[in-house]
Length: 196
Image 1 (spheres, rainbow, N blue to C red):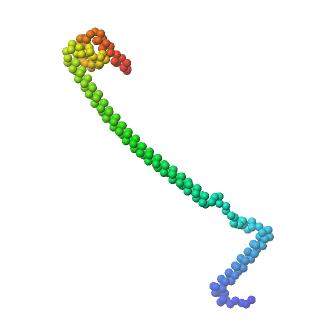
Image 2 (cartoon, rainbow, N blue to C red):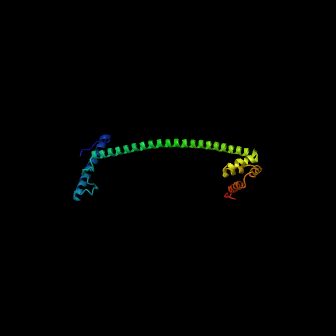
Image 3 (tube, helix red, strand yellow):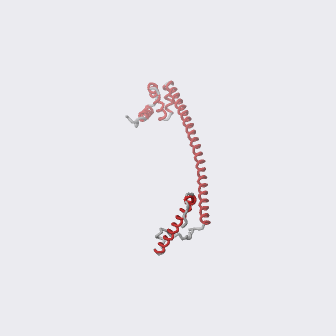
């Protein structure tokens, strides 16, 4: 062996080259040992922990065009269903608006009818009160002549509204059977009213 001078060893590049040579030599020997051990084990890759890496063919379940067609069909069905739902929603909104309008019109008509009935009731009440007052002011004999021609129930209604002295004076002028019938109707009007 030739001696290497101290100067050459101190160079950074020379030492690096020597170290690399040693490492490369060690790696080659380890690979040879690993291969020899594997052959001795029967060529089994299990010793090295390797799996079978042979590429296998992947069989697709269906052609991509079939899948694409199925997806497009499903998308079309969903779009049609969404369109149907949108149309139904619009129909329901229109129906709801019409129902609200009709309900409002019905409420307005009911309020108007109620006001009209109140006016009619007030007018009828005013008319009956006016007639009652008029019969009270008449002479009892004249009023009795009118009551003789009236329906008994109608006459009883007037007698019930009159002041007792006026109704007594008129009833005294009526035939006895008519006065009795009017009295029975007046007495029976509140017979079924609750006592408590």
